[in-house]
Structure formats: C-alpha cells, structure tokens
Length: 84
Image 1 (cartoon, rainbow, N blue to C red):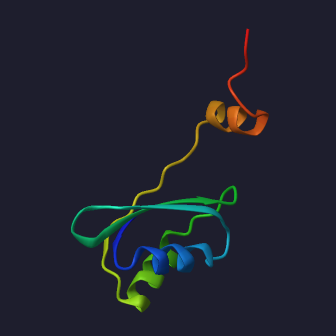
Image 2 (cartoon, rainbow, N blue to C red; image 1 turned 135 degrees about the vertical axis):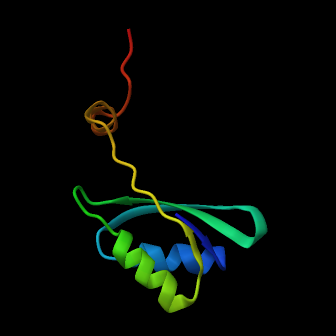
C-alpha cells in the first residue's frame, strides 16, 4: 500500500489491525509511505486498511494484494533455500 501521512503513525496503526503479523514501511516520494503487511494465512485486510486510512485522513494512493507461492511459503517455513 502507499499512503500519505506520518510514517511512524501509519506503521503503528497498521500493526494494530486484526490479523497483522508484520509491517514494514519505507519513505516514498512527496511525503508518501510504502507499507508492506504480512497477515495471518487467508486474512485479507484491504478493507480494514482502507477504512483506517479514511478515518485518519491519510490519502490511500495504492493498494495491492500479493500472495505467496507454495514454493516461497515452503522456503519461508523451512528456514531457507538449503545447501549442497
């Protein structure tokens, strides 16, 4: 997601949404904040995130859902790409 507002406030508020496991933020151009959110399996927080942005009066400039492939999920769960 890309929001416009104070980075620390955005990160703290998104962390408080139900089902959120991890949040990373990075400053973007013109006062925007790029937000990546990891949620519990099967949890879609796009609606809650949109409502949060509206309530806080943070313009929501982009919102997309990324899903992890089974291979990526396996690598994350097993702790890495293995060795020789």
